[in-house]
Length: 125
Image (cartoon, rainbow, N blue to C red; front, top):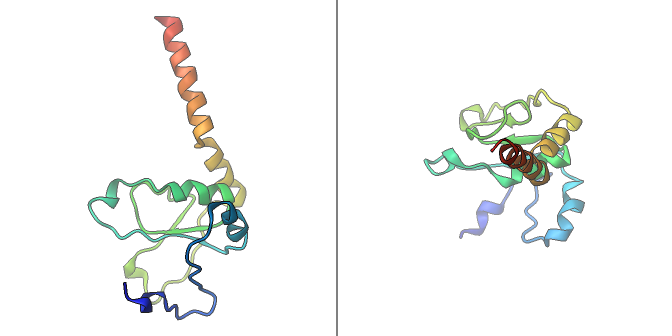
């Protein structure tokens, strides 16, 4: 890969390279915004990025490519046609709403819901 793709023009953007997973919360706590910069392709039309749920759980505002699986009420969707005159318009939800939405979609919550459905089905035969 060419190294010049890492040359950001804004002084507040930095490419850090590889960061160990246990260190990520410390880095994430310093984010102003989080990004889901997927290129739109037939494959990404059906993707549900795991990063979305991690970002939502942090409560940090999210900027994302317009993927179909992105919940618009918790994420600010950006697209190429918005540039160069793009002005950030925050999502309609606040930090606590993003965190709550992530909690309601955690693996634990989903497993609990599935468990309840299975138990109810077994009880009714």
